Amino acid sequence: MISKVGVIGAGSMGTAVAQSISRRVGEVIVFGRRQEIVDSINTDNCNKRYFPGLRLNPNIHARLMGDRQGLADCEAVIIAVPSSEVRFIVNATHDELTGKFLVTVAKGLEYPSLKTMSEIIRDETGNPDIACFSGPTFADEVAYGHIAGATIGAGGDPSLRATISNLFGEFILDFSDDIRAVELCGVLKNVYAIGTGMWDSVYGNHNEHYTFLNMCYKEMCIFLRAISRDKGIFTKFCCFGDFNLTANVDKSRNRTLGLMVGKKIVKTPYLESGVTFEGSRSVKGIIELAENHSIDMPIARFVYDVLSGNNNVRESVDGVIRKAP
Ligand SMILES: NC(=O)c1ccc[n+]([C@@H]2O[C@H](COP(=O)([O-])OP(=O)(O)OC[C@H]3O[C@@H](n4cnc5c(N)ncnc54)[C@H](O)[C@@H]3O)[C@@H](O)[C@H]2O)c1
Image (tube, rainbow, N blue to C red; front, side, top):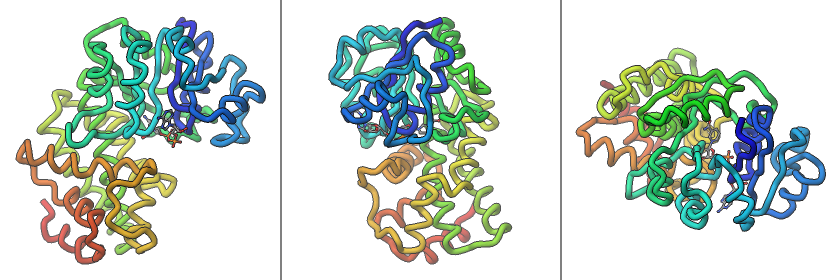
């Protein structure tokens, strides 16, 4: 059993993961940047800002991000901040992170490097084996202990895979050794969730919804077939499960963004927002990756077109039907 695990990020997913793994490790230290959240975890066993009604397990404690010794004392560290922050945070703490078991739950694609989160962490720490965790896992449901499946992306090191499996043993797990493909599933599903929201803002019945959903999944699979070494990825939690969760459920931030753009509640262009609508940041990168591999992705292009400022969602949506594979 690992005695001490650090979680960087005291938001929804950081707190949820901390609660889940706390049943399997000696102590979890959540690293946050707001004093009031750190204090509420340490004094009330509660992250009052994100989960005011949830009692955290007593072996979860919190420190400010600046507590480098606290981070250095952890055997494994999970990174649970928005993808836009990952390089900055890992760069600032690389002395403490180098040589540790590192897992990313952040989902996104850096632009213009087109690197995934594990690749950024590898760049900054030099650690050869970084693992990622990805699946149909809404943070609030994880925090309250509901059943969830997830894919662990982990490379060749058997001890890393064993450690991570034990850490995330509260989940139903599957595995892939193609970490980049697992992470790209988490990027693609956000793009298609935005697209499905836009589509649903125009076409509302069930046949229309599931037809578009199927078209999205087909395009996602064409992309994955071209870039993934893992030929079984299509049925893994990071792919089918997370795609469906994010595109279908209104609790999904990216689906909601698509709906709000479609209904003109959110104005475009909308590509550089600081909020965690990570799909909008990653869509340009996905299109560039697709071009590099000569893959035609009309739906991802339609999402990009609308987010870039084409406010005629209906016209763009109808263009997708004409270009459908
Ligand atoms: N792998 C999964 O199954 C899964 C599920 C849900 C979310 N996520 C991912 O987890 C990541 C975090 O999402 P979330 O829902 O927790 O977001 P959130 O907005 O709820 O929380 C993010 C936290 O990061 C903190 N933060 C931001 N910048 C920071 C910095 N520079 N230093 C320290 N802390 C900083 C914020 O203060 C906030 O507390 C995202 O990439 C999201 O896609 C993954």
